[in-house]
View 1 (cartoon, rainbow, N blue to C red):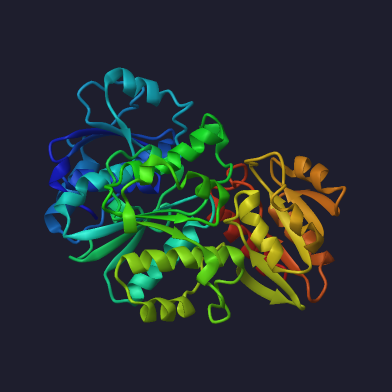
View 2 (tube, helix red, strand yellow; view 1 turned 90 degrees about the horizontal axis):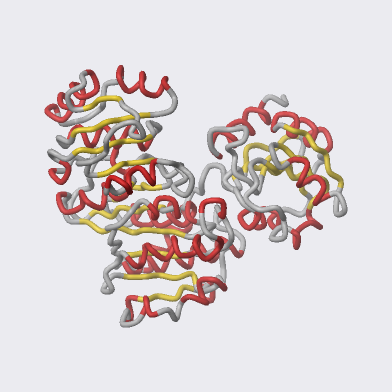
Length: 452
């Protein structure tokens, strides 16, 4: 875990004890901070009371173990019910909606910043061995691009780790050796909770409408993305996905003045042949690869190493992941497609699709997917948006409102013929029926494997 003197003697309230919250508590305790921790789920609190933190440092292990078993360094109180005056920060999960949750006002009234684990990492950087940070944001393609950059850096023999919105919580990971590179996927929610992260390389892939329930319209959402660059020193690299019209429209902002060669406008123009990159097919992956190439060049990795690594990139679970082939029918898990723009490339990739979609909708349309409706043999809707999407799609294709994922898999598998594809690409968030998109993708795999 990351242990830093930056937190010693400070006092934090930690709200939310899922993966990032637990890692935060353990890192802060090992660093000598004092905390109040809380979760709306009593089981999460009890689990923390009883758990033993993992650490290679014996002294840190003892401090954390003690803190988790006593009310000295760590106690359990709801930050909405205590006086927050004197706290150094309220640390919340990115899932906490700051525009609606009362903790935002309560902390503001007490003059206490609301922050996330990425901000704590930013504050700890000065105590870590010399390193660089790459931060990647955008609406779509973040995970693939982040994982691809990490893969290239690792293939080049440079110490590296994934963090942020992908992989393990960054505070729970061991610090990198000198010269290492932290590669962080950063959602708008995480950027909202960050105030001092100065990325050596910052990336904006694209901006399309998403998460608008958390922002004052599209402008507010886009502004959140831009903050990653507002925090950045002007002598550090900013790489923009110039193929995206929204990014392109912002490329002349004063924010980029005087960046010179440190501002890189990435396009797919140089990507002329993807045939040697089996997991990076399609125009969307050409854009992801172009950005990854620009980033790793900025990190002084030579082209021979970069292009060799592109050939060996294994791809991501839950992103156009082939689960199995049964009776000539391909079953593909694209659970990570949580909005229509992200689903569109999957629909473009296969000619005859039995499309499973639905969940917690982020938009009330499927316009981004419409150009590829001719690839869809039939649709099977699930979750909160099942009826809405069934009504939208009925004029264009055969639709079955299946309600839940297991039913949809069964009905789609029965209807599919050899040469066709059963595709889970929900175009929705998962939180109506699943913990997260990973749990949804795992449930798809289980349902497919149970077909026999």
